[in-house]
Image (cartoon, rainbow over all chains, first blue to last red):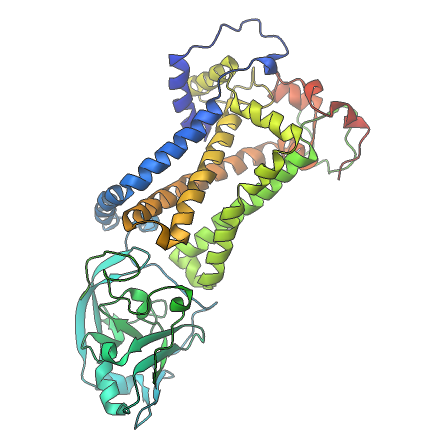
Length: 264
Length: 224
């Protein structure tokens, strides 16, 4: 640790050579010396400011570099560096809920004519949609070209028959904590899926399996993991992060004060 | 020469000298507690495998934010104490002996304790780095905490600085703990405020404990 600082200081030291101190007395503490500590602190503040100003550009370059390095890195350590790429794991509850392919159930209720409960097998038997899109998180990370396969949410809504007064969807998860919302108009888009495959493999538990929502045009917090229930409501009820100030209409690049390239 | 690993926190020996006052030790203790909480919550927010273990993201975020914003507080309060101010000014000032200490370290790659005062140059640099790092992390952290106060490029830049500086802080804090683990007497000094005279002479030969604010109370006062 000291070696790093030593380089900095030795450079400073060589430009301002200290006085000869051969016969240092025992009160060397009295020697005032130069305020290097203050300079280090001020220097770091300056570097920090430069970093904030130029960080967007630098991180962009680093992302590309790290992406190429981590693709050849068998240890996966580079994936942990800032911008090392890949999905970050976010969980609102204290545990990962477990549902197997056999025990999984999705219920659709609320303002519908035909409430229903589906097993995973029943969902897989429905018409399937496969989308290949970038995943964009509101915290900044983006995973390029991820394939999602599932049932179009609009198809499930059609089967259930939304009543006249139904205006929005309240989505619940079997972690018991997370919730999300969509307006009925949004939910009827063809690029919103109840997804069971990710990159042509069953969605893993960490990624929200066996079944999660996939909302292609919006920031990834809209894509609720461990989807348990779809309730049609007469107005939008804010979801988990939306209670903490995230935008309800979370279009990528047009919300949350961000300007990312759209994902759909 | 080396002392027993742990000699407890009892009454200081007659041969002990005072190194830190209560105020200084509390500044160190609270700062390190806040810093470790920041580091550990950061790990559980950032490393996917750890995040999968605990979840509770919202709770971790709140803990991280509040411990982070409180990090400068212990030292700020400590400024009301003379001993803290005195040591701060010692840490700030680099003497010619410090430059020599660092040059020796660079040349020989080993710590040369000769000529070190109450603090050696490495300790001074570490203190300055920590001070600067806390301020930079605080500034960039606030930008990330309140997304509305800064434009997107500043937020991306702040994320960049916050993430990479966090990595550097983690490495240096590990180094700091490593150095402490290697020196039981230094730990004893931070725990009780007292170190043996022999250790002081060996590690900090240019430090005159008689100049400490309450040097005289070493043998008369009970600690902890």
